[in-house]
Length: 448
Image (cartoon, rainbow, N blue to C red):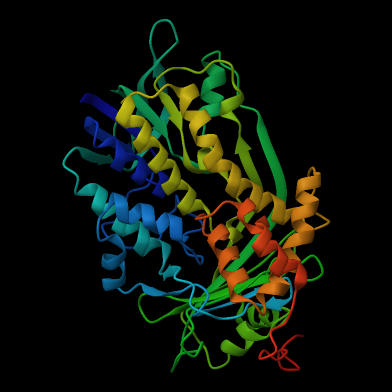
C-alpha cells in the first residue's frame, strides 16, 4: 500500500475518487476551498447545486457498488424513487413517450442531500481526511520537473504549506487550473474543444396541498429546434417539489413568479404549467448559466508529468440539461478503481487512454443533441446529422411503442451504447412508425 494521495476538490468526482484511492493508500487527503457542511446544504463551490439534478441508472449502480446500500439509505432519508418510463412523463421532439414499466429506477432528491450522503460515506473511511476551507495554490514537482510530488495549499487561517503525495488527482471542476499549471512547469496545455450553448436556468421550489403530478415522479420537457425552451418537474426529499426551466442561446427564464409561470406556459406541452396551478412558492428562485460544453483533450498530449491525473468536469463538462455529470464521474471512478488494482500510481497517458471511451459517449450525446439547434456552432459531421434526423423519428415511434422508449432511456442512462438504437430490430420499429390499433392519438389541445 502506498503512503499518501491527494484529491483536489470535494465534488462528487473528488469524493468518488477518494473512495477508490482509499483501497490502495494509507492516507487520502481531500482538499476543498469551501468549508464543508456536516449535512445537506448548498455551497458556493457547487453553483448549480440548487437546481434539479438527476442520477442516471449507471451512476446509481456504481454508487451502490462503492457504498453498499447507498440507494436504500438515500430513500430512507426522504429521496423519492420511481420507474423512469412507467412513472415519468417524457416530452421529447414534440412527442409524449408511451408509458410502461421499464425496470429503470430513477432517484429524485436535492443535490445537497445526495452529496452529503456521499461525503458522509467517504468521511467514515478511516484513511480519508478532509482539508476544507483551504485554497489550492499550485503543484510541487521533483528536481527534474518530471513528476508531481504534491500540492501547495493555503488554509483560510494560516500560511501556505506543501502537502507531499505519491499521487495527485485534480477534481476541481470546470475551473481547473491544471492547464495553467502544466504551462508553468514547461508542459503543453491540453487542446480544448468548446461548443457554446449559453444555457440559462431558473429554478424554484414549491409546496402543494396534494400531489401535483398525480403519482408521477418526473416531467421532463425537452426543447426542439422549433421551440427550444425546456423544463423539468420532480419531487424533493422534504415534501417540496422542484421546477427547473431553461433556454439556450440567451433565451433564459426569469425567477420572478409571474415571469417564471409565463415561461412555463410557453412550453410546447402544458404539463408543467398545469401542475404549477395551486403552487405555494417555497423560495424566491435561483439562476445558473452554463456557457459551453468543454472538453480538455489530455489524451492528445505527447508528454505528461508523472503522478498527476485529471478527472470529472476538470476533464470534460457537458451541458447539464442531459444530467450526465454525476454518472460520468462515477464511471470514471470505476475506471480508476480497475487501474489502481494493477498499479496504485497509474501512468497518466494510460489513464487518459482508458478514460477517453468513458467520456466519448456522453460527449457525443450532449454535443450531438445541442448541434440540432441551428444557432449552436460546431462541426455537424455526417454522423451528427444522421443522429439528429433519426432521433425525432425514434421519439415519434416511442410515443406508441414503449420498447423503443425503454431502449432510448437505457442509452440516456449510460447503460447501453448509442449504436444499440440502430440495431436492426429496433430500427425497423422506428422506421415503420406503426401505431398499434389499440392506441389512440393524444387528446386535442394537449399540444400548444
